[in-house]
Length: 248
Ligand code: PEP
Image (tube, rainbow, N blue to C red; front, top):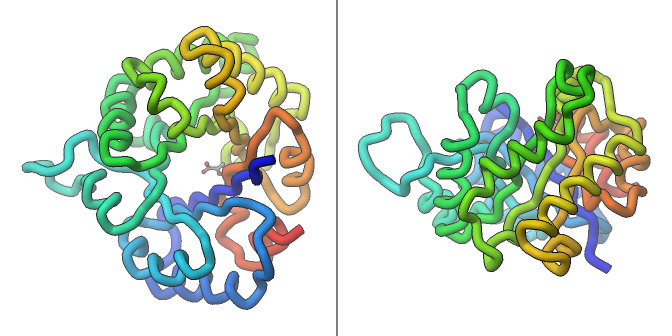
């Protein structure tokens, strides 16, 4: 049985020094990992964290990348350069990128294709906001996001994408979906992948839950058979909290 995946999204938090201290803290508290672990620090910490992360068998991920490998794109970060420095994953389609930086499905799709071309694994975030949940259109909304974002992703590449279901109303709010709602969404996502890529690939694709996961509720999500792991924002920033979660 494959291990469940725990992804830490540090967002725009921690200096390089603090990132390294955090890894040292994990090292002192770690005796054999039950989970596959990915830490997504700010870009500036990736290079410095690489050696110790390798030693601890923790994968590193970026929180974003651009859809070209090089060129006159001031301030953007190349997926080729990220892969070259040893990042294995990249988070794409996060609601904060969609909302604050106006990334739409087309842009996210271009980023996904370029990330895959560079052998990065993609953690694709999808999720409805409060209005769609209220109107009960969340499934249609999420499936539509998947259609846009996965446009022309082929069968050879689909398993290099992990889908993170992150209802926007649950991110950083302390609100979570019920197990039943998480299961329902995971099964609709699987149905969509099955229709687009066949049953076998659908049975293999990983689906994470993200949105206010904390040390109080993580067990509930990790125990669901249809959920292959969790994506943690706020609760991954505090060393003690994070260690409690990854070592339970
Ligand atoms: C996230 O940033 O993807 C996230 C799930 O954040 P939080 O855990 O803080 O809700």
